Image (cartoon, rainbow, N blue to C red; front, side, top):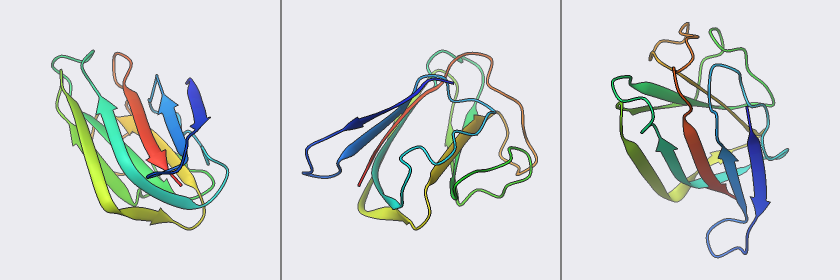
Length: 122
C-alpha cells in the first residue's frame, strides 16, 4: 500500500489522498481526522476484465472481510471513474478505505493489479 496525503488550497477541499495500490489491506484513518469528501476517482484501468469495489468506512480502522462499509463504489474492469459530491460525504471519525473484487462485506480478495484511488477532503 502506498498512501500519500497532500495539503491543498481550500477552494473545495484542503487534502488530496492518493493510494496507488488500493487493495484488500485497509488504509486506516488516512487523514488522521474527521472531514468531508467532495471528489473521488478510482482508476481500475490495469484490471481489464476484473471489476473492483472500493469501500469507505467512517472509522479509525477496519477489518477487511468483516467491517461493514458506509459506502461502496463499483468500477468495471479497464475503466476509471470519478464521483463528485457537491454537498460532500461527511465523516465524523476518519477515512478508512480498501478495495476488493466483490461487493459483499465478507469479500477480501485483492485486485490482481494496482488500483489507484484519489479523493479530496476537508
